[in-house]
Length: 73
Length: 216
Image (cartoon, rainbow over all chains, first blue to last red; front, top):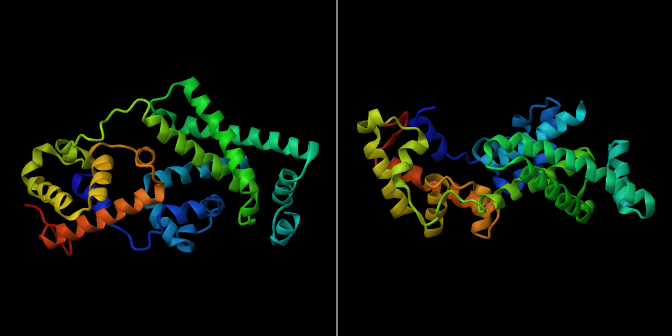
């Protein structure tokens, strides 16, 4: 990623972005569906938009997804 | 509690069993608490190990952080047991708390060995933050100067503070939450509004066209 695309990615906001509060509230549902291979980005576009833009929530999602997948093994 | 759990349709047996046992009394509750703590500790250890390479934390500190996260998550889960609505497995819902606790504790840990000063404004680091090539400075110099002007002129003092901390000083958002006695949602919203304003300012000044950036 070069400077132009990184700046673009940082400054461009998605109006569907639900914010951290709602994303955190939904995260267990979203992660479990994602682990099962469900089309979560279509079902919860606002949460998906948020996870693309918010580093900390995305990190939590990755951690929860890893936990759910690990539990299944 | 039992009535609440019974009302949740489609709950798997294990997920129905957990809240009942945890809300009960006696040895059954004690056994459930110990079992849940064990699961939370395993998840916390896995999570700090996953994030560990990117943190300035040693082995014992990581394990201590995992223990604290598991203990605090257990307390949070017990106090919020009635909020479990069976929309996921109980363990998935519970693991969310321990993941959040790991994040919060990593945020707090940042200030034990802070590598930045919040009052510093490293504007010279801005090109590097976004990965602009110094060899092509002629292309981006005006744009970043305009961005700095917009930060100074368009943002509120709070938005500017959040922008400087996160973008210029590379302070993790969860660490800034601690410093500003705020919460993740509020800091994110402040930065979200700042990003929107900066985009609008750059567009109004001709740096962004319909098909993307207008380079010098």
